[in-house]
Amino acid sequence: QYVIIDWHILSDGNPAQYQDQARAFFQKVSRKYAGNPAVIYELCNEPNGREVTWPVVKSYAEAVIQEIRANDKNALILVGTPQWNQAETEAGKDLLKDAGNMMYTVHFYAATHKDQQRQDLSTAYDQKLPMFVSEFGITEASGNGALDEQSGQTWIDLLDQDKISRVAWAISDKDEASSIFKPGTDPDSPSLSDLTEWGQWLRKVYTGKDTSDAKDSPGNSDSDQKTADVKSGDSGLEATLKQSNTWNSDGMTFTQFDLTLTNHSDQPVTDWSETLNFTKDVTIDQSWNGDISASGRSVTVKPGQYHATIQAGESVKDIGFIVKSDGMVEQK
Image 1 (cartoon, rainbow, N blue to C red):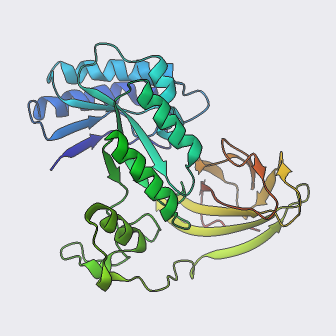
Image 2: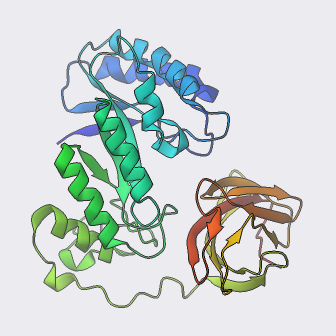
């Protein structure tokens, strides 16, 4: 059994923001576990943000790798790439030098990341880039939404073909589609019947065995979600916003919203924009699959790397964001 010690950045985006702390952390843990072949070091989970280019991440990695190599010359080190670990081809053009035993990480969620991301992985493979998939699932990139088993199998076939190791997300009972266990599972004695649809699929892929006694009943995970329809004044899109989670931390309230856009027209929609209004001033804590910004009580959603064009009759279900506010916030 292997253990990945992961500096799990996400909302901070740029690993250089806490580079000094990361160096101190990896210096400490690599000294403690020096020589243990079961320990793998992952330097930064998912670098992201417009200014976070490969040269930025590479510079951070070079600094942190020095701390590990001072204690352990042979430990396996995993290095993330920009765009939530989907810019491996950029790393392939400018490899780290003298880093020793290391690999570049790739993340994918099969319902969102499909042909283009698989082609990028194949391109990086042809560049002789050593790669490790340190996070994957078959949901949408938000961790929720419908499972895409067909795309997931295509990914697994590609990883098997190129002999690329992978780690599934997540051994959790959180109420979301990417959790392997159903909410309320006893962590001390989980059973096959506790597996979610995703957990059953993963078990079958890994073992070839159906989980006949773990058939998931039709879920009601959306039963406590607040839903509202918003008509776009400019694009003609229909927007459905769901409040899927809320929690408190450091005196602030965090609320996750998942957005579905449906093009009911008979023409593709491009250069679209959606403005969503809320009951309180909000700031964006995290967002995915869109260019999302907040001003006062309004959140504006524009196309990101994906979904620049929404085809006639198409629904986009993997855009989402987490807002931070000084209390409970709802859509107006």
